[in-house]
Image (tube, rainbow, N blue to C red; front, side, top):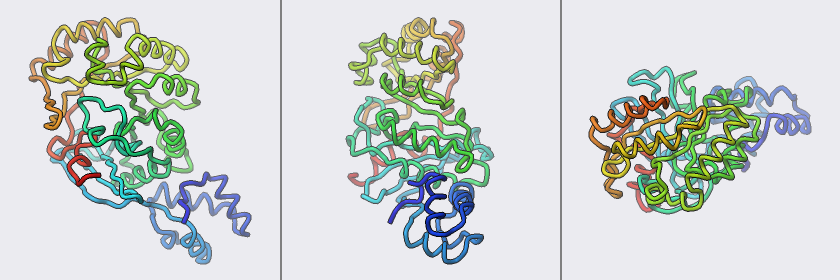
Length: 347
């Protein structure tokens, strides 16, 4: 059985026409699937019964199996899914503001596991299994949309398990559907790709005709520290990464957000703040997003004291860098990347 999400609107129109059906039914099917969240062809009431039966016999819509669901006290909801091959992935619905569910960011995975093994992240502890297909990525978005009220899922971030730019073609294919007015119709500027710093992927993204947001996991402003935290730095060191960022901004005129996880005793003192300000001072359209580390017992990771977090932020602000401090979401439900999957069985 084929996945209906493999087909573009034009491809579905062509199939319907070749079978003597009306072309405009393709838009109706897209509307049922992507806008109304219907997962059964039999529920598509404005399609002829023979067409519904034909589609049901040939295509599937939603192919994820829910394994676990956890709801945080702040409204964050985390889902653990089993794929058709029994591999597990995670996705999260995050309220844009505490207890306000009118706008939700969907955080989705792009791979099963992760090969980059950052030392503050649970995603790579069990190793890398495989890339997600574009259809599996869209399944995550469909499920998150179906478990939000109409109009609530307003933003998508590729910040779940995996490295999006290591699965470039499938991620970009999914983004074009997420952005398409005929499908999810989520604006490109409300879609964020987060990368650990895959320079070839960043350069390729700069050439795309998509105004998506780019977020780079930085987490240290010295190669020595960053290479310990993020082994990818050995292949793409800071000088090359920052040069690439200059080129990206020059080509796209778009801001880059630098994610910086504050880890007690590692990268959160005043010297680290000074190094970060110096690294980014000449980078036009740069913003820093500070993130207190989620506790991960397996990695012995904890956040610094609140006073140290505030001092770090204040130094960057005084240095002229735009800075945000991310509110911690879902700590009571293991909402950080890979934590729920890590605790579930051996997958």
